[in-house]
Length: 131
Image 1 (cartoon, rainbow, N blue to C red):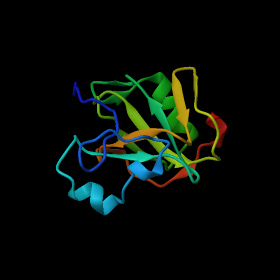
Image 2 (image 1 turned 180 degrees about the vertical axis):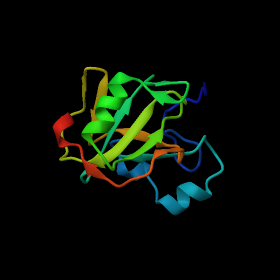
Image 3 (image 1 turned 90 degrees about the horizontal axis):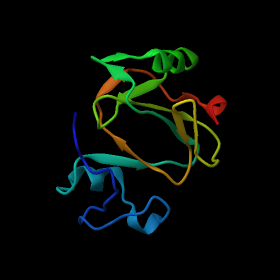
Image 4 (image 1 turned 45 degrees about the horizontal axis):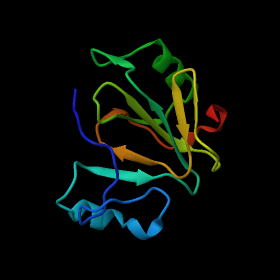
């Protein structure tokens, strides 16, 4: 299990905010940065993410994760920074985040880490049913 702090920081190592665009930067600037442990993305403008914590057992999805993945065939899915969770990336209107049945759904004002560790190659699919 990896143990990274998930708080957003800017390219200079100072605290950033998921709700203050003045603390954000471009992908190119973030990629060049030498601080922190990887990249993150601030959700909004139709981009959403489902966060499934502790759903991988020996690298395989548990029943809850299998159910979610079956509901979003073809979705792009990454392993989360912990190594035992999944981030399902997709599209949904901006609305408050929610937690229901072990599924966290976010579409605005939330910073989500991007690991690049692909669990399932795919595309951004409609996640509206999870809100």
